[in-house]
Image (cartoon, rainbow, N blue to C red):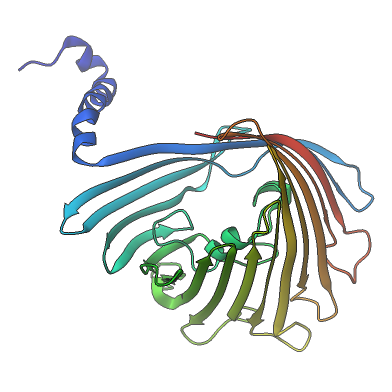
Length: 341
């Protein structure tokens, strides 16, 4: 069969059209979901006594594709691709994909391979505890990000193998092993490697978690590199208010002038009334590079649900950075919209 004349001039367009026509057939073979979020806020950020910066800021917008195929006998195959993009500029994040995985699930639990975060079916051993126990004010991104900066929750990792057990009496185990080496001739991919473990427990109004992580490197850890960590947390749903606490210790290969043990904690509460929610978080983390420094931070947010998918957000954030330094505190206020599709 000869191709249509237009396809000789526009082969890519014809290929895309053919793929679109094939989607109904693909959908019959497996369930494919398309979704994502767009989060934008207008912020005012000031460091010390410097001039304030006004910005339109993206807060971890993303576009995701997920699929599940029933293999029979209780087995299922799953895949996921989620692209991160900056909604304020239209640019992709780097790396472009937040997660990219293939997984196999059954009575034994779920096993996943790829670039993994809490959005994959095996969860994230440490970060899934953070999202289940605490409430962000208003996003774990942009001016209010705490997952990496304050809690070191190791959410998104490449070259990973993840496992999630079935729930037993309200408890489930999450485990992840991953390589962190450069993957070059000079440094093998498994030159640096990590193991994260977490147990998340849910029973009635109580959510609790306990996590542990360990890093290793061929030839020994580098100076001030993370050695291991543990964390524990608890949340209680009392109806209109949900208090929570999460705390732990990161241990580093320290020097005479840096910390071996870095303690961190977050204490907060979510108050709800109708479509309104208020979040208050108090955080503290030892400064690893300064044996006397403490990083103290508070956050407050108001959230208003216009629908199940659309939320208005307003926040205030004050981050002390390092208690031994003057004029370094970062203060931010902002307001915006989050839409889930």
